Image 1: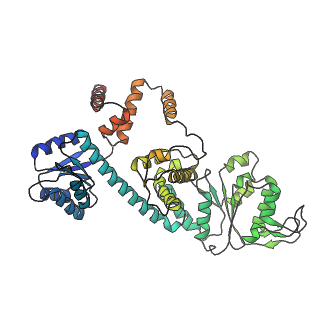
Image 2: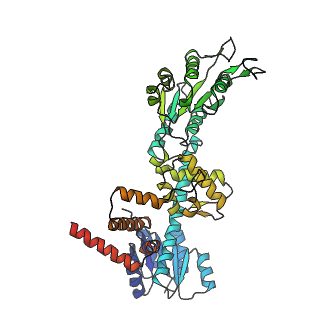
Image 3: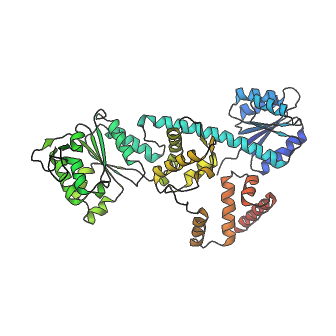
Length: 459
């Protein structure tokens, strides 16, 4: 269960303090009270406070002076000021003092609730972006390899352990998970980093051209071979050859590759002389090579030559903790001149997505949002317009209804679960939840009371 948000209410009028305390407690806040700025400063030294709601005019230190003191004691706690002098001058003075917002007395309850909620969201946004910067810094030593999940930490540890080895590595994972990024990281963190890194996609070329690319050819070896050409094995000599999508290589070419790996020699197409090469092989595939072997599509002896060190990259949907640092990295890559942040609800939405195209699809979504939005904060609406293939996004309502039908949920169960989810996503804020649900806040309270009665009867 999420920790309740905490609020300090500062006002020398006890009646106002009690009224506001009751209002915010009803919204799920933990509330403390202070009758003066001096008492408020003692409170923030003792308690973890998410926000402060303070009157401006009080005996002793004013609310404006309190803001200045709080910036020295608890700079991360945003302050919303209440003033009976709703003038531009008061607002400007409050903002200059460091207040996040102000409300003018008398005010509607919803105005105070929303002002405090916005202040807490702002604090959460700042904290999230600070955490993201730390996360990106923590992974900077691994180049473009980004992640903070347990799975990625295991990959980092394995990369560090085997980067200096000559052993072949087989990287498995879905398309878009970053297999080439891992391969490059292995190369550039090893003792071959000063030598060539030669990548090739085994699905990108027909068999004949792929053979020529790998092994080279002599002049006249085939029609159009007007000059001799060194292959990737020779060009990668002393370094690393990355064979992407090795599972798509034809069986005849697999046999020729196996011979090179066994002998350490490469013979160009049409040639009679072999050349010794010292090349580390890193291969990658999104296929199940075990199944391909059973189906007669991949050589078992080649598989064991390549799979000396297996390295699997889980799909992004299985490691949502990697989404925030990846987002921060993509923001830096595609908008280095802009100071862009992602609103907490938008980040939560990003973490909840399946990302069928993995990190590649996530990067596409961020790049597109940056191109379409002029704001400094990306919201959910900026990110969800279309999927990475440029087609309309799968309707989330449709997915929800399909799941509900499969579970044979009643209309009442579906309604109750949806209300619970909206309350969870809004942190228990009934004002925002009621607005999203399109119902009155009192109706939401009645629904909550009904759920409590039903739960009591069930127990």
